Length: 562
Image (cartoon, helix red, strand yellow):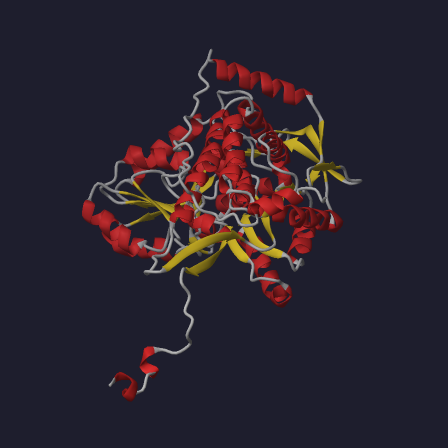
């Protein structure tokens, strides 16, 4: 008898419906503060020291097997760029095909598994991450992605735990959406997984995104080929370890590192491609979409394409705004994690009446922000991710320094002698169309345009049209009429819109995340709107007493009725 044949017989008629079973009600994971003397601080520091002394080998994971390759890349610390943490296997087209084959082989059993069994895998993974694996995932994120302890905690631990718990709740809401039935008929909706494999492509900047892009389609019964950013290989490696310990069957998620173009081209060429779950740059996503279009006649199904891409996220302050609140939002929203968040504020519109006070506050605070090795918990920032990012920030800063329409009012330093360090930098410009007001830099550089207080409505139009993106944005005002004006004028300028708060820090279950325009498909990570993209509904109608005569009453003759 073939392996798992008994499972196929058992689950062949399984219908994805919640029944009477009810999993634990999700709540957001509490953020640990890592205060001096606390057990969690000591545990994390110990794990950091252990990882710093190691140089591990990171394999591909295909069909549950660890696969070594002849070619490898080095995983380094951005803040200590000569320190190698791991040698990462570099996959090629043949490994992508092996991963696709493994995903397809696992699809039949996994897709027919009752939803409770699939949910249990990810709920168990959440418990493992919340407990014994927490320090490891956080330390990997800190060292390989240069996040501070707090930034790693809210991402790699809390947000990923929330994704795994809340997605089960969202899945049940989808399954519970059923059609009405007329007398003698039972109508029901079966939420089938997609036919084929899902290609998940994740970025370096959020460990939780990698975990969610791969696991949310899997939760819905799909099988996945996951290609994480090479600059986040260490955390991806440990996420896979957590999922395996949680009981994820072989082949459900297949992990392949390598060149984006090499891995992507091979995956997108497969006739079995059922979907793309992507977070990354706008140009890369547009290129993938074009490739799908070019290949469309060769696919078995039209692939689902879900993407969250770039942003040029804004803060706009009304003259009635609280200066201290605006300054704090800029400092946190622009410079936490070195500005390397899709949601980070990178353009500010400040009224002339508030700017002198705001500029002074920013200059004072920026001079006190510490950047350095993230193992030193007194640092507010680490390094940008790599040399390419460093050069992008350096070029923008140098350009502002020599510009006739812009000037640096805070920060402006950079040094890559030991790590890729860029000071938090505030640029002031007289030109709302200045390059750094509309081009994404993805670093700790924010540009401010100072507007005439009397031109509030015109400024809102500038905010709306000033960049091609539509991801996040924030408005600061105490004037309710001004807030309502901003709500209406900026209706499409941001998919996540914040009132008197920074434009970063969306929480699963509270602020579903995503934007439109050049920022993506707005399918809202951390919501049922994302999960519903990974199912292909089938409507089932059962008639209890079927008709036995093809004729309808209107066909009777008048004589028959007399």
